[in-house]
Length: 319
Length: 319
Image (cartoon, rainbow over all chains, first blue to last red; front, side):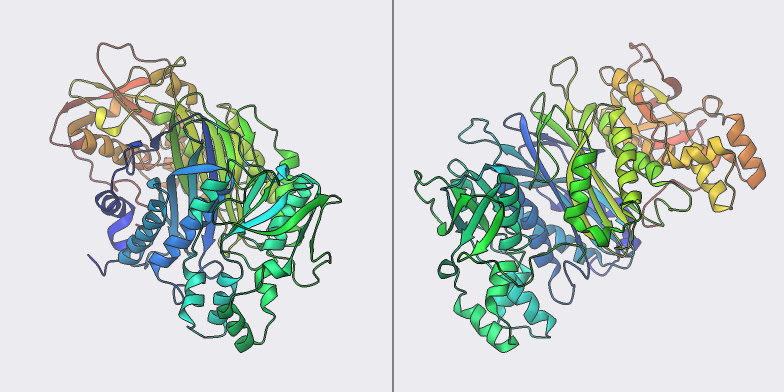
């Protein structure tokens, strides 16, 4: 089995392997192999998010294992859901792949996705597999908006208010530092390179925060750009403090070795999927978060220590 | 605006255009532009289905307009949901595209998707746009399992029983005939070529049937192969009658011109998204359906007039 390609076993053969491999989930009453999946929700407000990952752009098979790529692909979607205040329940996985891709590689990709989903008790429930010259992973995550069984409003980007604190849970700049090390041909330091391969998402800090924050976002395009989305949608001025965002020693070391400014990674690096939120001052800072700035009256802008950042602005997928 | 490329306006510019273009839907409390979409469901059984369409494999820009491709991509997913007994509510659209794709082309693609979704009162609620050398459309459709406000069980492939009738709503072989005409360089007859470009799905026949049938599937990989899925999952023998499946004159004409057997298109052609179902004999044949065969005790197999079909078996996406 192990050395077969996807073209050799075909789409239906692959679906049968997946059916045998993926554990059935209690909340899924119709899963992989039928026309559609049926998921039993806890309440009527379903939250959905889609992300696409393209080989060569979002991942490279020589830099990351299939399992790592699966973890990262799932994390991007799960973090989006948690940032909306939702509890993820189900994932649908679309794979477009060249016919000579090894079945084992694909099964490990699914293992990585399943393992990351298991961190928040979510499951793969369906998907599609087809042929393409460009290996493409499309993940849709579904979740429920709830808190102690009560349906609640989603956290929107437009909820930030002047006077709120800006709080952060998770790492910034690590995935970007790892990516830059890989681009220069380095495979170490492992802890930094691994941060690109497999993000460590603070899911539970996100769950804890959702009942108290006025807005939340996961940092996927860079802190400044993602805070910019909140500033624009909420029409507020957000200022962050460099003293709260000093890079860890591992990042400083890689930056020194590559001769770059580590604050660029911290401010504009994506893919760590840290949660950044705005919090009314009447609330206690939730476990796992730290204060990194403040929200002021508009006009909509993001500043660092009161000044505009002149480096690259973040990440637009066509630039 | 019209002549700009996606690389020129970027992902965020494109999202802003979409926000202005797509009408907000009553059941969507958080739509395009936030981290995730929030959809208000009517009951707790959500149905989800994903399909990927790849340029060069599933569509060609010189054969179909962007709007046609949008209709077809949406139809494939919506038909999957209806075949499960669900009412579609929301679509998430992932687009991976080369940077030189015209924004207008992409907006027309979304218009086609929206128009097809509007046929069943569903709406685009979110998605992702990223860069890829291979133009790829990934659609996830969400729906609800219900009937007159009551939550009901999904229709499974395993529900067919010996003694059931096999019933069909919609066309067979038309999309495949149109595709074969296009492959040979013909752009006519238009009615047949258009059947490839934009399937005519009998959504309402599907809605009418769901309360009475024992299994249902939409024909996306060919009648024999899709009935084969039901036969296998239900462990039954399904026999269809050629007298009930005689090709229409338009198909006979194209087959004569291309010198092929039109029954191959009828039996193995995909992409018309006809609904084929199994119906207890105690039930009246639902409006829009006709009887095309019978279900017998297993072993699991599909026959035509009692004989095995010796032509190509259908469509596996890696063969």
